[in-house]
Length: 81
Image 1 (tube, rainbow, N blue to C red):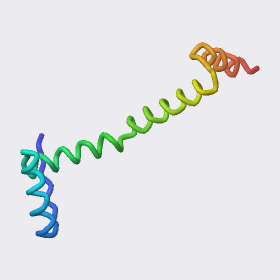
Image 2 (spheres, rainbow, N blue to C red; image 1 turned 135 degrees about the vertical axis):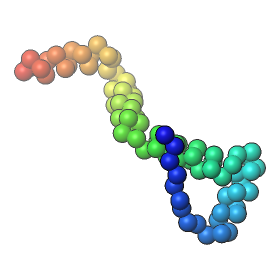
Image 3 (cartoon, one colour; image 1 turned 90 degrees about the horizontal axis):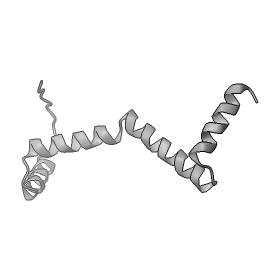
């Protein structure tokens, strides 16, 4: 289902945006839609969690840990050691 959004912007901003969109051979609506999609993607919880796991993985690699080490540590913590 498609829905509309009505926004108010300064005429000068609108004109500049229209020119820039045309330079990319895109309509104003298409460019706004693209920007909104990118924003939602970049700010979604899934993206944040993926980034966090990537950072954790890189940190563990720098410290010399391997995937098997992580499994071993998890098993030890769960067993109460």
